[in-house]
Structure formats: C-alpha cells, structure tokens
Length: 256
Image (cartoon, rainbow, N blue to C red):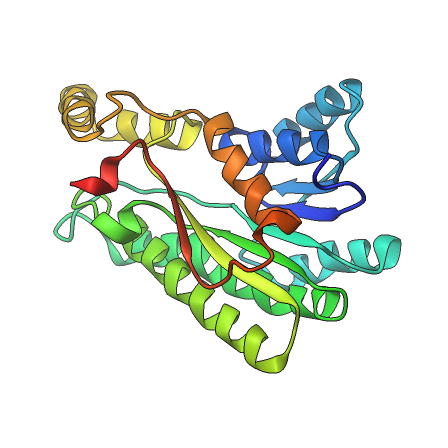
C-alpha cells in the first residue's frame, strides 16, 4: 500500500497501459480518477475495477480541450481539495515517415500527445504546489531512439521528454514540492501498438515485428503490467529525490 490515501489522475486509461496503471495504483491504496475519450470502455472498466474492491472513478475526458481539463480538475478540487499524482498517459499514433505523414496527421498527433500534456501540467500545478506531488508524463523509447515509420509520434514524444524537464526545473525554482519525470516504455502489447501495426498492412506489419524481435534484447514485447511498477515508483514517496529525468522500460531496446 505504497500510495495509501493518495489522490491520482490517469488519462487515456480505458485500456492498455493506462488501465494497467489505474488498476495497480488503486491496488497500492490510491483513490484513482481515470479518464478517456472512450466513455463506453471507461465505464466498463470502472465497473470491473470496483467489483475488485478498488477505489476508482471514471470520467469522459478530451485531453486536447482546455475546458475539459478545467472541468475534470474542478471535480477533483471540489471533492478532494488536492491532487497528489498526475499521469499524463493519453496518446495516439498515426504511422508514417516524413514523406508519408500529412500535416493533418502531424497536427492531430501533437494535439493528443504533446498539447494535452502541456495543458495537464499547467492546470494541475495549483492543485499540487501546496501539498506536493508527482507528475508522470508518458513519453516513449522513440523519443530517445527515433522511429522512421512514426515521425509525428516520435516528435511528439520527444516534446514530452523536454517539456517534463522544463516543468521540473520550474517547480524546483519556485520551491514547489512537485517532481516531474517522463516515462519511456518500449514496444508494449497494447491496442495502440496493435492498431498501428495493423494500419501499415499485413506484410509491413510482419516485417516490423521481425525487426523488433531482432532489436529487443528480451526478444518479446513488453506487457502493460511490466510498466505499471515504474509508475508506482514515480508516484510513491520512494522517488522523492527524482525529478527532471527519464525512466526507460524497454527490454533493453535503447541499448542499441
């Protein structure tokens, strides 16, 4: 129960890693507000998690909207008067190289993956700066290594990496007891990865998977629960002296 009595918000949490994070954080004693644009999946997940005895609350949330962020954080403020942990997890990927990526695809990816993190960090500070807390921004191994077949995704996640450093330095300079870090999963078995692989076509998907199996030292994709432990560490007081850095969970992929 490393997160006993902590108030947590996880975005993009109706499936994949976000759902795994929500389950694990709640199991560690936190009260978890979790959000997603997919209200149907989110409500189903809420029922399932509550049946397991976990203290979770779902809300539909468009993370690209300042107004929706204000509404969600307003609910938490009214009910809890504070926020201890923010996990900016909502994200998307549209496959495409520099020659294939359209401006529309690029802008949409930036809105969901980077703009949302900016809004979330900015609007969460008033709820965190008095009592302290942890902001965990989900980046990607592609922010460190790059991925030619996902230009907009890699670029957005690199932005998350350095936005996190800037916010961490700001909080430290202001004396806010808030630590801010980016988390960089490798290739994880999630609907996002599965959908992106399917989108590039069957043959290209097989080639992509074969390349990953050569380049990942563990010779397999990771599982969402294998990333959740890193989130718990960054959310808990065990990481009280950790800020402005990257945590990589990638089965050794970045060693190349």
